[in-house]
Image 1 (cartoon, rainbow, N blue to C red):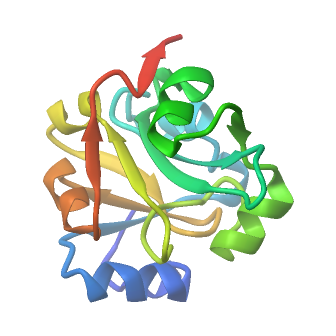
Image 2 (cartoon, rainbow, N blue to C red):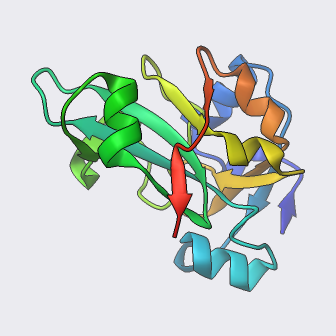
Length: 166
Protein backbone atom coordinates (compact mmCIF):
# COMPACT_ATOMS: atom_id res chain seq x y z
CA UNK A 1 0.00 0.00 0.00
CA UNK A 2 2.93 2.40 0.41
CA UNK A 3 3.92 4.24 -2.76
CA UNK A 4 7.50 5.35 -3.21
CA UNK A 5 6.57 8.15 -5.58
CA UNK A 6 4.03 10.71 -4.49
CA UNK A 7 2.67 11.06 -8.03
CA UNK A 8 -0.69 9.57 -7.03
CA UNK A 9 -1.40 12.57 -4.78
CA UNK A 10 -3.45 15.48 -6.02
CA UNK A 11 -0.81 17.86 -7.50
CA UNK A 12 -2.00 20.74 -5.30
CA UNK A 13 -1.60 18.56 -2.20
CA UNK A 14 1.85 17.39 -3.24
CA UNK A 15 2.87 21.01 -3.81
CA UNK A 16 1.49 22.06 -0.39
CA UNK A 17 3.38 19.28 1.37
CA UNK A 18 6.63 20.26 -0.31
CA UNK A 19 6.07 24.01 0.20
CA UNK A 20 5.98 23.58 3.98
CA UNK A 21 8.67 20.87 4.05
CA UNK A 22 6.30 18.33 5.56
CA UNK A 23 7.68 14.82 6.00
CA UNK A 24 5.20 12.21 4.80
CA UNK A 25 4.65 8.89 3.09
CA UNK A 26 2.04 8.22 0.45
CA UNK A 27 -0.41 5.35 0.68
CA UNK A 28 -2.39 4.13 -2.30
CA UNK A 29 -5.99 3.09 -1.75
CA UNK A 30 -8.90 1.96 -3.86
CA UNK A 31 -11.25 4.89 -4.49
CA UNK A 32 -14.26 2.97 -3.20
CA UNK A 33 -12.42 2.43 0.11
CA UNK A 34 -11.48 6.09 0.72
CA UNK A 35 -14.07 6.90 3.40
CA UNK A 36 -12.56 6.77 6.90
CA UNK A 37 -14.31 3.77 8.48
CA UNK A 38 -14.11 1.61 5.36
CA UNK A 39 -10.49 2.60 4.69
CA UNK A 40 -9.42 1.84 8.24
CA UNK A 41 -11.15 -1.52 8.33
CA UNK A 42 -9.78 -2.62 4.96
CA UNK A 43 -6.20 -1.37 5.37
CA UNK A 44 -5.69 -2.20 9.05
CA UNK A 45 -5.78 1.23 10.66
CA UNK A 46 -7.95 2.27 13.60
CA UNK A 47 -10.29 5.25 13.25
CA UNK A 48 -8.21 6.76 16.05
CA UNK A 49 -5.23 6.87 13.66
CA UNK A 50 -7.23 8.65 10.97
CA UNK A 51 -7.30 12.44 11.01
CA UNK A 52 -10.30 13.82 9.16
CA UNK A 53 -10.18 17.23 7.54
CA UNK A 54 -13.49 19.06 7.71
CA UNK A 55 -14.10 22.40 6.05
CA UNK A 56 -16.57 24.57 7.94
CA UNK A 57 -18.43 27.65 6.77
CA UNK A 58 -20.05 30.44 8.74
CA UNK A 59 -23.64 31.39 7.99
CA UNK A 60 -22.60 35.06 7.88
CA UNK A 61 -21.86 37.27 4.91
CA UNK A 62 -19.08 37.19 3.95
CA UNK A 63 -18.66 33.50 4.68
CA UNK A 64 -15.73 32.57 6.93
CA UNK A 65 -14.17 29.19 6.27
CA UNK A 66 -11.97 27.05 8.52
CA UNK A 67 -10.06 23.81 8.07
CA UNK A 68 -10.64 21.59 11.10
CA UNK A 69 -8.59 18.45 11.73
CA UNK A 70 -10.03 15.88 14.12
CA UNK A 71 -9.63 12.17 14.79
CA UNK A 72 -11.93 9.80 12.93
CA UNK A 73 -13.21 8.54 16.27
CA UNK A 74 -14.60 11.97 17.21
CA UNK A 75 -17.05 14.56 15.89
CA UNK A 76 -16.42 18.25 15.31
CA UNK A 77 -17.96 20.74 17.75
CA UNK A 78 -19.07 23.07 14.98
CA UNK A 79 -22.01 24.63 16.86
CA UNK A 80 -19.98 25.99 19.75
CA UNK A 81 -16.21 25.66 19.37
CA UNK A 82 -15.91 26.48 15.66
CA UNK A 83 -18.35 29.38 16.01
CA UNK A 84 -16.29 30.71 18.92
CA UNK A 85 -13.03 30.39 16.98
CA UNK A 86 -14.45 32.10 13.89
CA UNK A 87 -16.25 34.76 15.93
CA UNK A 88 -19.62 33.99 14.39
CA UNK A 89 -23.06 33.04 15.69
CA UNK A 90 -23.71 30.16 13.29
CA UNK A 91 -21.56 27.80 11.28
CA UNK A 92 -21.90 24.39 9.73
CA UNK A 93 -19.99 21.90 7.65
CA UNK A 94 -19.26 23.42 4.26
CA UNK A 95 -21.41 21.77 1.62
CA UNK A 96 -19.82 19.72 -1.16
CA UNK A 97 -19.89 22.62 -3.63
CA UNK A 98 -18.21 25.01 -1.16
CA UNK A 99 -15.61 22.39 -0.22
CA UNK A 100 -14.73 21.60 -3.81
CA UNK A 101 -14.64 25.30 -4.80
CA UNK A 102 -12.39 26.16 -1.84
CA UNK A 103 -10.08 23.15 -1.99
CA UNK A 104 -10.23 21.85 -5.54
CA UNK A 105 -10.14 18.38 -3.95
CA UNK A 106 -12.43 15.38 -4.19
CA UNK A 107 -14.84 14.74 -1.32
CA UNK A 108 -13.39 11.83 0.62
CA UNK A 109 -9.84 13.05 0.03
CA UNK A 110 -9.90 16.61 1.40
CA UNK A 111 -6.77 17.46 3.33
CA UNK A 112 -5.21 20.66 4.72
CA UNK A 113 -2.22 20.49 2.38
CA UNK A 114 -2.77 22.75 -0.59
CA UNK A 115 -5.39 24.96 1.04
CA UNK A 116 -4.58 28.66 1.19
CA UNK A 117 -5.84 31.65 3.17
CA UNK A 118 -7.83 29.61 5.65
CA UNK A 119 -7.30 29.03 9.37
CA UNK A 120 -6.16 25.56 10.44
CA UNK A 121 -7.67 24.29 13.70
CA UNK A 122 -6.27 21.00 14.99
CA UNK A 123 -7.97 19.14 17.82
CA UNK A 124 -5.48 18.59 20.67
CA UNK A 125 -6.20 14.83 20.67
CA UNK A 126 -4.71 14.62 17.16
CA UNK A 127 -1.33 15.64 18.55
CA UNK A 128 -1.23 12.66 20.93
CA UNK A 129 -1.00 10.08 18.14
CA UNK A 130 2.26 8.51 16.94
CA UNK A 131 1.20 8.67 13.29
CA UNK A 132 -1.82 9.86 11.32
CA UNK A 133 -3.39 8.88 8.04
CA UNK A 134 -5.01 11.75 6.11
CA UNK A 135 -6.50 12.42 2.69
CA UNK A 136 -4.34 12.89 -0.39
CA UNK A 137 -6.67 15.32 -2.17
CA UNK A 138 -8.37 12.54 -4.12
CA UNK A 139 -9.99 9.20 -3.33
CA UNK A 140 -7.04 7.05 -4.42
CA UNK A 141 -4.31 8.25 -2.06
CA UNK A 142 -3.65 8.96 1.60
CA UNK A 143 -0.82 10.69 3.42
CA UNK A 144 0.85 9.12 6.46
CA UNK A 145 2.69 11.51 8.79
CA UNK A 146 3.55 12.41 12.37
CA UNK A 147 1.13 14.92 13.96
CA UNK A 148 3.89 17.48 14.62
CA UNK A 149 4.18 17.91 10.84
CA UNK A 150 0.76 19.64 10.89
CA UNK A 151 2.29 22.48 12.90
CA UNK A 152 4.29 23.47 9.82
CA UNK A 153 1.08 24.73 8.22
CA UNK A 154 0.97 28.54 8.45
CA UNK A 155 -0.99 29.70 11.48
CA UNK A 156 -1.97 26.18 12.53
CA UNK A 157 -3.53 26.21 15.99
CA UNK A 158 -3.96 23.29 18.36
CA UNK A 159 -7.36 23.63 20.02
CA UNK A 160 -8.53 21.83 23.17
CA UNK A 161 -11.97 20.22 22.77
CA UNK A 162 -12.39 21.09 19.09
CA UNK A 163 -13.89 17.62 18.78
CA UNK A 164 -16.30 15.71 20.96
CA UNK A 165 -16.72 12.00 21.61
CA UNK A 166 -19.07 10.28 19.16
